[in-house]
Image (cartoon, rainbow, N blue to C red; front, side, top):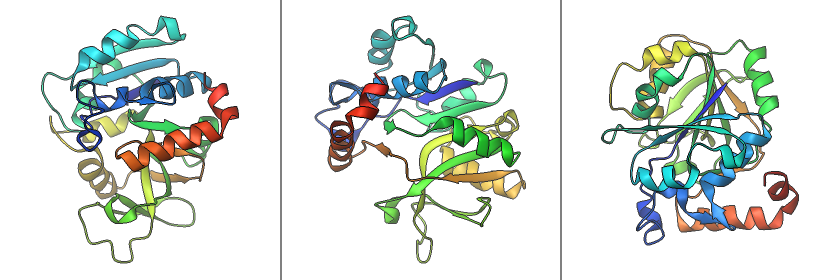
Length: 241
């Protein structure tokens, strides 16, 4: 399986840390959050990686190159202009030939991917999204699921959250190639455009719920939470190094 990582974020809420670098290159506990993410990928045998670059792409390309020094194979797919959070996946489709994994480039991830993949295969899913209880559900995209984990409804962070719950998309998912066929726009937002289409088409849409640590660094507060976790869990940090 290929792992596609969206690395094009500007990180405006983290300025001035992001003055000269894209958000995934922000340093967390000694190295860029994106470096931590690639360490996680390698530990979980996701060694074939496509970095979907955008804003200040040269910073990512210069740092990671072809990935050989990290023991992985990295291909760079650089969008010609901003394509939203979903457009870069469609733009990189020539690199995708089978089931693939997608993750946002601004998260620290300690998910046991083998278990998530087993859940995906057990349910014969077309897409499996990792969800967790959000600490900020009021400004998060929320998924409502049944007792089997099948997604019943998607509530965008821009919608009324009354009674929505708190299970939020964490930024990690497994997709089958059929999902690419729903990407019929050049520029689109991954969740708010794609998730409703998946539900409308009756595809196998499942949510894998665990409370394993996965967190974005989108704000100074979330960045500190992520850094505190890494520092307080040296056993995880060392296993990913």
